[in-house]
Image (cartoon, rainbow, N blue to C red; front, side, top):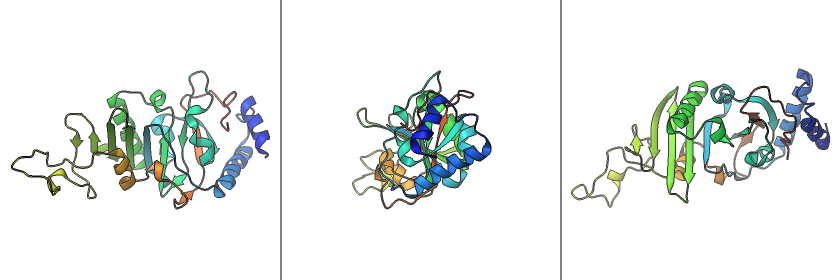
Length: 241
């Protein structure tokens, strides 16, 4: 199926009534294109989730995503710039990158902007996928958040300027404040679990740093674009823009 022909089918909505055989061909097309693709750095625009690659099927139910469409890394990377309509916005689930899949794009419309909504989403993802992580970065505001959840429960989290900032037992790779050579217990104060603060560092230790993806990254399979509302279909949504 030629690329221009595929875009025409998408734009007119003719993808939606395709039978199982044709949809299998679409997935094959994405898999073939992805096999010749070289990984490159991603910019999730501040907020993303990560789940183990083999367990990604749980993402769709956990986040209420619909009408998935197979795409390559390049086709999904600019997810927030793609057309949308009637409240249906696309979310990108990446190919498997060093054993993990990242989820980003239009998350505020899918999940919300409230702390409980953020935590609820990472808990649901971990319940459906076994483990999940959330990362948020706003360098301009100096805000960092990173969260690790397992089997539906938060195991460890850090959120700048929260009270407390660190929750849960430190993970083995963290550098604790009380172990810092400059820390003097007689004059300095620190919580026993005060550890890593920067999301940019934590993501690289926990799963994948999006900004460090490159030729050395092991990429497998293709990605998916999925919509945050059911029954919308793909007409008018040029997912390959």
